Length: 77
Image (cartoon, rainbow, N blue to C red):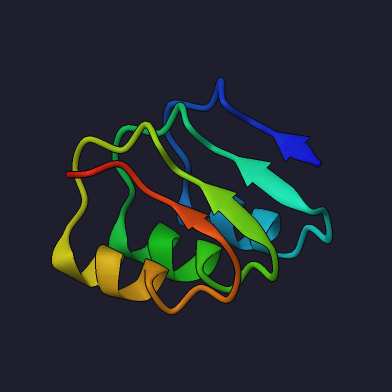
């Protein structure tokens, strides 16, 4: 399990690298915003994603995340 709750921001490149992680869960609850590009990259992860810290998310980012294959935790924005 990979826990990265202390991350406040994430670049598209970092999101692509994290998407390749083979672990069970990925906790990114420290992120308050996510770019469309980073959302598309994270959506490629084959496992669980926890993004409960998000306070802002574009409709394109949300659409990308909803294509994620696995459990997805999002706050009620």
